[in-house]
Image (cartoon, rainbow, N blue to C red; front, side, top):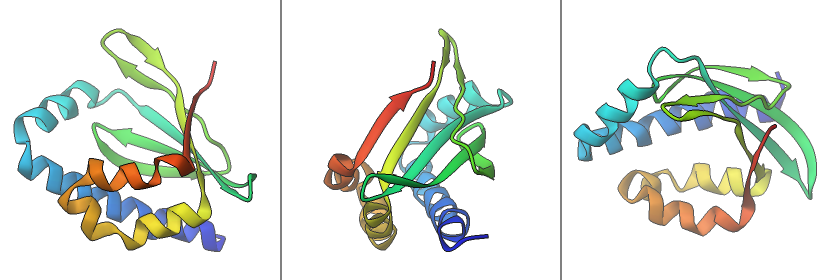
Length: 129
C-alpha cells in the first residue's frame, strides 16, 4: 500500500467518520433520514487524487448509508442510488489540499461547510456517464 493509500484509508476515512458523527449529534433528524434513505443500496463514490494536475491515485468509497464500509484502491467508480434515479459523482482533489484538510479536522468538526469552503477551489466534482 502506498503512502497515499495509507493517507486515504487510515486518516481520511476515520476523520470523515468523526465529522459525520459530529454532524449526526448536531442534526440527528436530518442525518438519520439521509442515512435511512441510502442504507443497503451499495452506493459508491469515487475520488481521484492529483499532484500538479496528474492523477496519482484513484479510490472508490463503498457506502453503507452515510458510512464508508470499504475503500477500493485503483479506480474511481461511482454510483449513488437515490429516490429519483442514479447519479455517478466523483471528486478530483489535489494531494496538497487533501493533506491540508486532514490538518483542519477541528474546523471541519465545528463548522464543516465553512471549513470546506476554503478548499473548494482545489476540488472538482465530475460525473461518470
